[in-house]
Length: 254
Image (cartoon, rainbow, N blue to C red; front, side, top):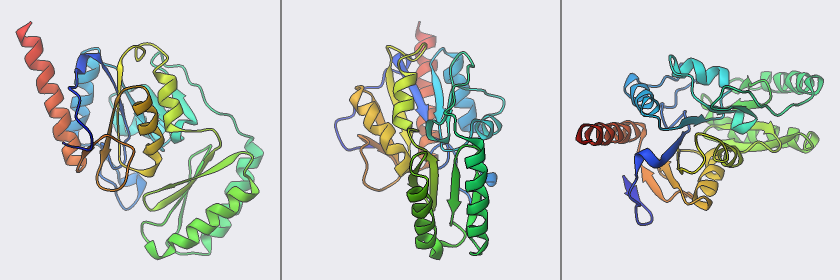
């Protein structure tokens, strides 16, 4: 791990861990449905949870997709950048949007995307993602399209740029604020928050974790609010292995 500030000693048993998924626990793929979390990392998350250490995932994906990726685990989760949330007790707390308006936006976006081969629309239920990974030359087209919809539906939608994607998310949804909410509840409350992410969508999370005196870790290159850095998804997996080893050695010495 490299660091931008002095690296604090991580006392794993006193921490609460929050993980982004795509680009952090899992390599980014040409299409979202091709993404998978390596068994090595799944096993590490399971081991953390088994040791009584709070673990949550905070992602742009809907919770239903997160559960599929994390099987057999079912962790506390924030989906669609915090528009969906499942607490540690399993309670669902979601931002509500008008279904008729969402249907109208879906139809308009689908028609607009159909005019540009390579531009893919993903309906997340309460949010929409315009993917241009398969056609990077369409970045400005996707940007203008997303900005147009936000200008017309700004009372309910906000623009969230990401890696080869522009998302239209519910206004008020934020990875930072959803981490803050988790940290006010058991079993997260009173612990040191640790958040690992890779994208622009994670910067709000880094900011809040820094405010809370936690540990913010950026995966990959680029400007960031995070205090520390891991270079790749593989480096995240190796870091998780080290956490497991530390837990095991301390347990054996007790």
